[in-house]
Structures are given as structure tokens and as C-alpha cells.
Amino acid sequence: MLRQLEQIIMNENDFKYVIDGLTEILFGTAYTYGEIIADEMISYKFRCVCRQYFTQEVAEDTSIESHLYYLTEDMRSFGAFKQMKTKVSVLVPSGSAAGNAGDGYTQRTLPIADLVRITPQQKEAMGMIIREISVSKLGLMTFVL
Image 1 (cartoon, rainbow, N blue to C red):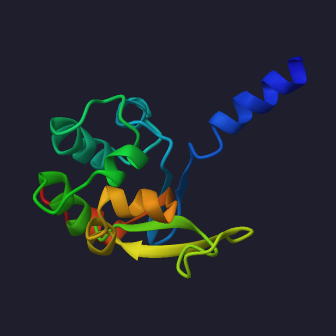
Image 2 (spheres, rainbow, N blue to C red; image 1 turned 180 degrees about the vertical axis):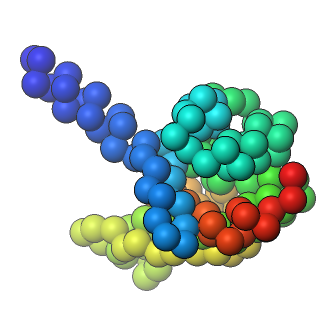
């Protein structure tokens, strides 16, 4: 029983990570904006963007995944994501493009503008899972608050 509980806890945190690379910062989409703002190990400027842009449109307990799932081009946060040159890694069932059920998932990386063009209904029909965002360090550095 304890082992099952440990497995569940581990699985809840599987997509809560930050990888600070040379040219980009990768965020697991299970992170909520409140957790990002509170975590001092995350870039100060990104935390400011979260506080000043994202939490003005969505609640602090909203995950990145939920925010991106319903993001539209007319939202202020879309402009922030676009200015930071954000790319989104998504998982799509292998057979979803052909309309038949596949036996796995295919990972795709989309610019934020391409993701926003897909409606939430289309994302659900495709079985799309948003797993990770990649924020350009150059885009973040040149971002004007």
C-alpha cells in the first residue's frame, strides 16, 4: 500500500520540473503559476512575467498545461509567450492524424502561435497532451516588463 502511494506521489510530480539549459529554460506543464512565483530557484524575470502577465488572466493555482490548453490569440499572455519565443512540446496519439487508434504517442514541438490556432475542442478530439514549454533565454532577456 505504501509503495502504491509513493508511486502516485511520484507520478503527480513527473511533469513538475525546470531545466535551465544554455539557450532555453524548459518547464514541465504540471507546475502552477503560484508554485513558479514561490520558487526562488526559477529565473527572477520569468517569475515577474508570471506575476505581471499570466496571473492577471488566470488564477495562481492554474497549471501551465491548463492555461495553454485554453489560450487564445486575443489574450495578453499570448503576447508574452510569443515575445519569449515559447515552444510547446505536445503528445498526440500516434493514429490521431489518420483517425484510427494508435498504440502510442508521438511528440511534436509547436511554436506557441501554432498551438493557439488549434481550438480546445480540436485538442480534445486529437487527444493532445501538453507536456513541456521551452522559453528562449534570449527572448526572456529581451522581454520588456
